[in-house]
Length: 138
Ligand code: CMP
Image 1 (cartoon, helix red, strand yellow):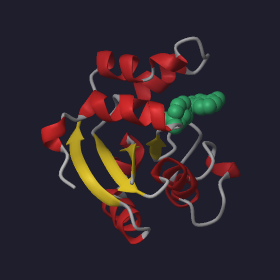
Image 2: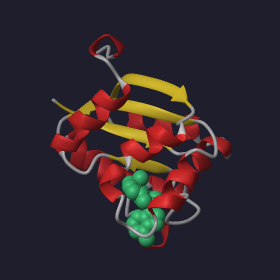
Image 3: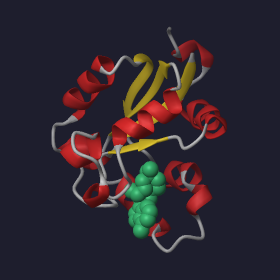
């Protein structure tokens, strides 16, 4: 079983889509083994997205991620990293396939409803950013 990491972003939380997204995660066969609602500080968001530091959208991304609460998730499933990325859909909702979370719930490439780890290696790093072992219940 693989583990991956996800965030329900401020736009989706604010728009009342958290429950729908969590329901979809479970109905697609993921087991949620860690979940927490929190507000990211600017320092947290900068550190979490440090890989994008040189990108032109970094400042706006950090600002957006601190506009309201988020829900952070650790999910378990066979091939969880790819399965979660498939369920999210393309980064830009305009390019996302029908019935993906971003097609259903995202507003724009920035306010794109959900985040997901892009590799197993990053999933481990991102899970450890928000959860300690005792927070994860299989
Ligand atoms: P996420 O999966 O959270 O990872 C980085 C985020 O940067 C991405 O989703 C987008 O929401 C955001 N972003 C904003 N502008 C862009 C852009 N032009 N290209 C890619 N990602 C962008």
